[in-house]
Image (cartoon, rainbow, N blue to C red; front, side, top):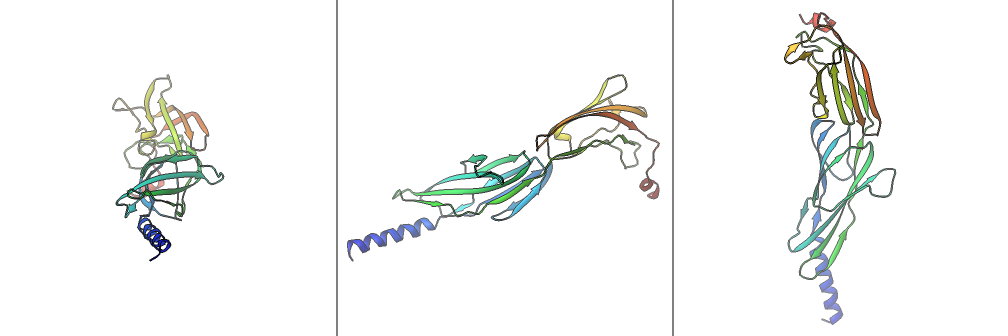
Length: 237
């Protein structure tokens, strides 16, 4: 065999060795808008949800024995060509807190430890994540009478990344407060220091910020109406 043929054979052999390295990246959506989600996204798939969207990027390599792997995750907003976020770990935890559509792509470089030969895998297709714009609805009444309907004063929110709410009585005394960790599951049950407050008018202050940058500063009355029975409550008796 000629020297040229031997070199060609060696090059082909190295290409085969390097091509054995594979990555099958995916993104696991763990939580969206404070609610648990267990969904795996692969290439060309998409997810639409409300902020904050908690995700885990997983490179999922195989056949990397004897090689050094270098990873680069790029998050690019759909209306931009420049990555807004770059991470270099094999697996990355990331939380989307801004509204918009984002494409997540993994670029990988593999280096053979014996020969120092390098191959770049830039063939991965993006995974798309869309974070919706924010909204916040604060009701003005509830009926904590134990009938199982509207017993807790809850705020309906979507794509809210900062949140705090305060309840006051007519004399300005604070009775209750809750933050973003309790935004979806929490709320006011009409008690103060473990005792039910009287029916009547109370006051709420909500300070929040959406994933789209909108700031909410809401102040209005809340009516406690324990004697109120909804139509559905009556029909269930």
